[in-house]
Length: 165
Image (cartoon, rainbow, N blue to C red; front, side, top):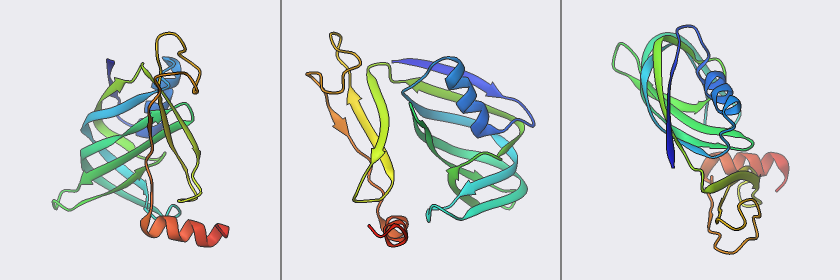
């Protein structure tokens, strides 16, 4: 496992910059482990999977965490405004950096992260496969381990109801 550290500059889109950074370096499996910075515009997707929250506000990033897979990233963010109200959601394009955002990623070079449909939730969920030295790219290779994130609750119920699952 290796680390990557970089800075997102004022006016840049936080999500798009992280995705571009990973694409340019061919990072296909990573965890967002730290971020210090602030935003001038926040834009999050809420847990229902549909509603977008957007607000022009100077806000400190108090947490940023998630996974980066071959199909993109699943990252959650929390921010605190000047009145010390904390709010957050799923990071989407449109979060604009105010002065800086310092990002630390942990590359998961021994893992293959993909997303596949989960009939339980109705969403494409994380499929993590441990690679071994002999068969790095074969999901069915010996020595594999699986980890799966499951989204239930209200978002899962809404999605299943809308999709007829």
